Amino acid sequence: MSLFDTEAYTCLSVQEVYELSFKVLTAAGLAEDQATSVAKVITAGERDECRSHGLYRLPGCVQTIQSGKLNKDAKPDIKDVTPALLKADAKFGYSVLAFDQAVDALAAKAKQNGIAALAINNCFHFSALWPEIEALTQRGVAALAMTPSHAWVAPAGGKRGLLGTNPMAFGWPRPGPNPYVFDFATSAIARGDLALHDIAGKPIPEGWGVDKDGNPTTVAREALDGAMLTFGGHKGSALSTMIELMAGPLIGDLTSLQSMAFDDNQKLAPMHGELVLAFDPGLLGGGDLETQSARAEQLFAAFADQGARLPSQRRFEARQRSLADGVRVPQSLYDRITALDL
Ligand code: NDP
Ligand code: PYC
Image 1 (cartoon, rainbow, N blue to C red):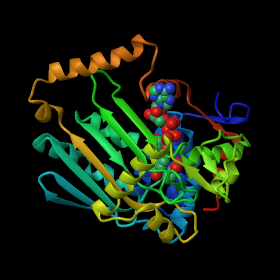
Image 2: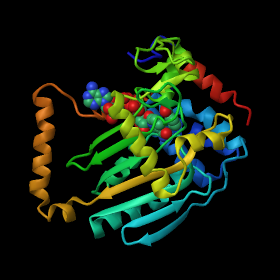
Image 3: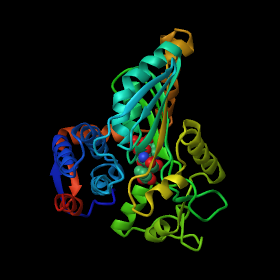
């Protein structure tokens, strides 16, 4: 049952979600190429019922676009640094356009070298990572992506925001339409989902956040105003720190703390870097793709054998439903979007 199941809704087709997003973004002043990439990722989130990264993000995008900090006409500058390294300077535009423009070259480099990296710098970043992972698995390579955010999350043993909600996503190409993909925040819950609990007035479980004084809380608003917690205690805390380092200083970009300072309390999308790695199973595995794939498929089949599901299975099922029947947008969100002052 979703947070919004009891709310009135408007039904939109997936194409209408894209058109609404593109219209709002361009009316807010975003250049068409930026708006295309942003509308695409918002539509994918809504289509796959990842509500915290679908249309819910549109008002925040407008706020970021209108802030004067985002470069509305940014043209990413993509540099071929070495045979295995691309650097994309997003020029203070959205990460997703830089990714869209670099993805073919990244996959080609992985196929030439076995492994390749794309470092995206100076990007505003608000989106789910799985659309980028799927773009790479569609090109036949395995992929790993990570990015910091804002310093909302306390490290294990701490009680003040220091780390980002720092998502990490991985994908493995499979025969058939659906790859193996997981994509999760290293916080116990994504901030977007925590905010949706606040909007719906739903309590949160202990372990998601602490209040301003560092006390455990089950009130979403108190955790938003206090600090979020990592998943898996010290393990999630260390993984989150790795993401800070790998998608921050390693690629010459900001940590979540520095992204928050750049934001200067304007509550915009975080601005920092993203690291995307791509791996070619042909070169890394020595060329016997059939055996490699069979071993992976044996692993996946064994999940179902014991009643477990693969990550993204829910999403792929939601995608089929949405493409057939459209999506249900909570009326309050739809009204908020259509009332935006553009
Ligand atoms: P979830 O906890 O909702 O899901 C995490 C992953 O686990 C998904 O791949 C999901 O697949 C899978 N999963 C969930 N339940 C099961 C299960 N029972 N068995 C097997 N797999 C399961 O994700 P989060 O809330 O942590 O993150 C949501 C999104 O927020 C992500 O897409 C992330 O990229 C984004 N995000 C972006 C940030 C940014 O800075 N840009 C920051 C933080 C988060 P399925 O979808 O099929 O359920
Ligand atoms: O949901 O944690 C989140 C998030 C941060 C930036 C974009 N999404």
